[in-house]
Image 1 (cartoon, rainbow, N blue to C red):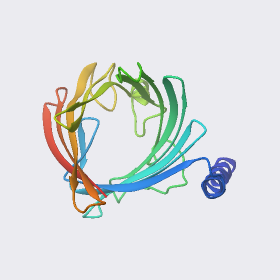
Image 2 (image 1 turned 120 degrees about the vertical axis):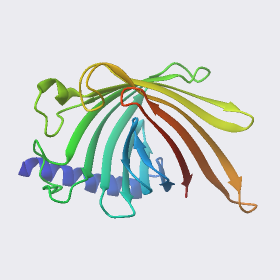
Image 3 (image 1 turned 180 degrees about the horizontal axis):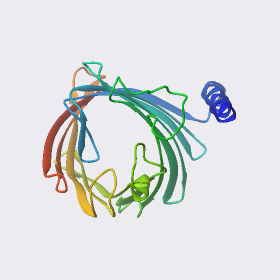
Image 4 (image 1 turned 90 degrees about the vertical axis):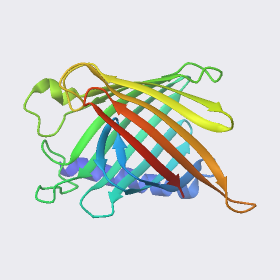
Amino acid sequence: MRNFTTRIFILCLLFCTTHVTIKAQELSFGADLVSNYIWRGSKTADVSFQPEIALDWAGFTASACGSTDFTGETFELDLSVFYAVGNFSFGITDYYGVYDKEEDYSYFKYRRGNAHTFEATVEYTVSESIPLTFGWNTSLGEKNTEHPIEAYSTYITAAYPFSVLGIDCNAELAMTPWKGAYADECNVVNVSLELAKEIPITEKYALPIYTQVIFNPAAEKAFFVFGLTI
């Protein structure tokens, strides 16, 4: 475990050095404020602040995004690395979430039952003219799992962006193929529609806002979310 932690530390140093010294990359950062934190058809928290930073370089995208509610009860930090080649994208994500202060959420303890969950992702986009994207996301060991099959909780999604009357839209349909973190059996877990628009504030600045209507048939839940991007 000490060797693993050392490698993570070295990768972080390389990341910091790379985004400072290499001129060919694109570095972006920002934050969202959302009325509810809904993730893959399930509610994680109430009003939340969600910062993000991303570095794109030579087909690779390294990003860090987080979320915290205004009560201080929940906290999340997700680190991911993706590589795009052709119409495919391959990635790995480390989800770190604190939802119960009585549990041991030590960040550098990478063990079963701790707050880390790793996930592998494969995405495929049909083409630029047909921007339909399919994604397969599988957890590599689910925490606090009694049944082995739940250790590979899987989320399969199809998303399609489009525009109507100057409003950017994105429709998503997602399912899980077996019992896991998303449902007790094969089922549809997310049917959502997002509408986004920029509201002019000054001559040089426009505020991006968006709304989401989300349905989870498996859980018999529905959500309506408003968000803005800083």
